Length: 80
Image (cartoon, rainbow, N blue to C red; front, side, top):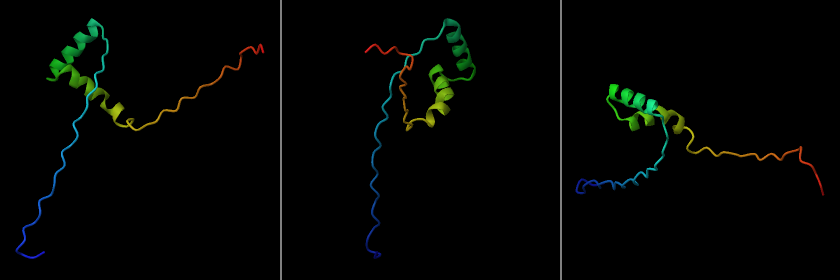
């Protein structure tokens, strides 16, 4: 590279946007009250609190393929 030329700028690719999915859970009124109290005491939202709690469980299993074994019932009566 000669001293006359300027170094080239690196092209920065834009990242794909993250697609979020909605998950709904049901909690009792007592559980909701506890969740609100804990999130208030930690100065966070209930949603962030739940996400932080389940993150270790979800990080390692995104690429896992689940094998389902269907076992036939051996005690079936053979009529024909």
